[in-house]
Length: 216
Image (cartoon, rainbow, N blue to C red):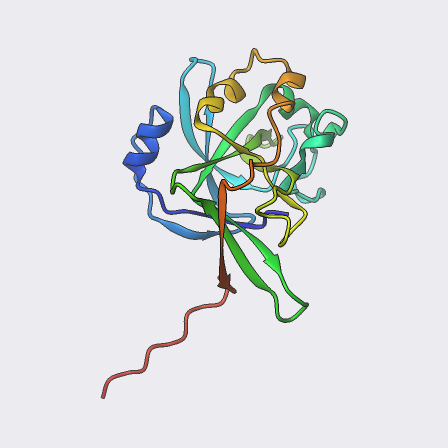
């Protein structure tokens, strides 16, 4: 399960790589948590790519009460077209979540530590995802997203059995194309090739850094 990831890539570098319309300026985020706003890139009705901020944790458009459902942060690639929770988004609302690394936890309860996985070549990472738009009866609106996971690659398997589905740059356009049949899109979701990722033990990134001593 991918429960944390990082996005510290410079905005101008990310825009140059993905070609979306917006000129967004955003600060580096070494730790992104479930429930927080996350950047997604999707293709919209104008045929162009757009960068949008949505909440991490998918809420299906058919939900009557946003508080009544558990909002998953991960979705298994193998069952996306079988589960009503994800099926519509898998067919019509695919996106990517740009990152420069994702975390997986390891160790015993109470002594867990996170391992950060990044690409060996330092390039941006494009995690496959789905997004949804929920409209409330009172006119309220909420957009959310989920990260798709697959079996772990050889690089990740010593730490965790699952990992995000990572797309190569040349695959992004195909994944975002709404005319691509859902089953063909699902066939793109696979473990990363061996050697693509490198691991770094980062301890517990959720712990605040130790306070610096005050100078007298």
